[in-house]
Image 1 (cartoon, rainbow, N blue to C red):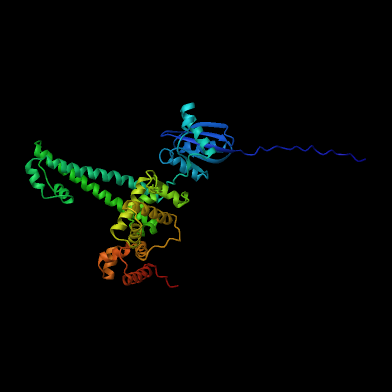
Image 2 (image 1 turned 135 degrees about the vertical axis):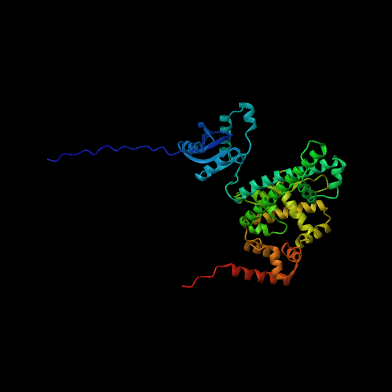
Length: 428
């Protein structure tokens, strides 16, 4: 007798797919407030975390607990949110900088940390007021720190020398007579060498104060020289092609690299870079007069760096720059308009160098300068080895003077130095 065995019933288990979420973070010095919304803008959760390492880890766990994170909008990625942006990016999340809160929403609903975090999340969902933040974990961030230190040191040094001059103007005649023949660095050196007698009379107080100010000036000068040396080393290591460009030194290169950040690929076109540097032309026409003016926005330090490049190329009579000035002058453009156009052209050139565009070819002199700096050879040593005047070789490198014979000799000498610097393979 055959017994029919019934099959067990089949159950279908419905698996809920993970939802896509968007997050916003309102950053502060001690705490960060995180809000999460879904792809329809509905609030899911919000919570406050401490702005410390353990708090950052809890934020990541909090986000992963509610779904797949599409993007996180962080306020203040250049200040309070800098470390959080680094941690989130290292965790594989797409981090966006929220530039401005929704002012209309703030007027209607007020302001609080939960509301600000929710508005940041809604900005990410809507794709408004966002930008890709700079990566702050490489050589460019180191240069930015050094530039900030250099700026304060320069201001303090200027204040000290101004104080010295103001002090000597109203000082007793005996002190003024001692230092009347000195100026600039010679004045600070002379004051630093003095040995004022301790005392409380006006003359002794003025002499002691002037000595302290002079010593402060010398210390700040040494600090600035050290910073410039570090900037040159970092800039040469980060982008030697930029350092080899005509009119670009360590200070200018550091400012341009700091503007682009450690991830210059976040700037996709040369027009965006020009707008970032404030050299994108803005219409300023009226009636029959058609003209453009410089932008008043953008990074003013980068704008000043481009202006320095143009002035240096004009001063050293760089051939391409002088040919362009002559052509545009013949067309009737004013000097100011020509400088505006040159700054835009330089911005395009710098953008190509920052993004390592192989289509950019440097002139012969700057290209040799790049090779020399890569080998770590000082310009004065190269001039001595080639038995040529220092200024002649310098003019060749900055593109001020075309010298075919010297260029050929210099290139051959650099080839020899490159071969000598390579280690000799050991015999088996």
